[in-house]
Image (cartoon, rainbow, N blue to C red):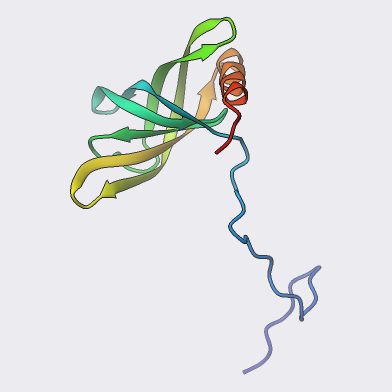
Length: 133
């Protein structure tokens, strides 16, 4: 079998880069247990937030949602100036059953449509909580 050609910019002897378990997310996240309202193709429902970042929200719901489903989301966060209502639209990018014996799913939503003031409020919220995730 002929040798595999080297990729441009990489010597043949250099191994491919490894992740080594490093965090791959671009934005810091913060734990945030709170209610969230979801609006999707099947109507409106309530869920619980697990964590947030400036670009997404992870939540728990009692049913699965297909990947790439666009949802409207609305939830309140505490900011230095009081409570702020964040409203956005995002696509489901992950939906995993929590456990075989439990009918609940962990759902990650990438928030692609949000006002700049809401995005800034989320950044402040995460920074105040230390963005530790």
